[in-house]
Length: 128
Image (cartoon, rainbow, N blue to C red):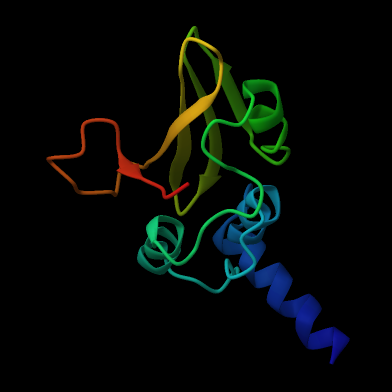
């Protein structure tokens, strides 16, 4: 059985050579992100109201929130936002964290070139 799991892992790495959905799931404490998910399924799970992160919460300290994104390939911090990006599904899946003037987490958005939402200026909002 271990051989099949290993072969499956290699095939997933061919599909997503840099980041995997499980990497994101581990960082955020979302256990239902499996490597076999399609892009659409992964995004649906991330923005679903019944799939909240175990680790992220509204009003958490900025330093604490930023430490969670251990597997992110790119990290960018600005005055009131931070971007954490994973290269997955042939593009960058970015998590845009918005902080208030006291450096507490207020909102988090998903951004990817394949997300089609004309009314979503910052991306799709995740539930906190």
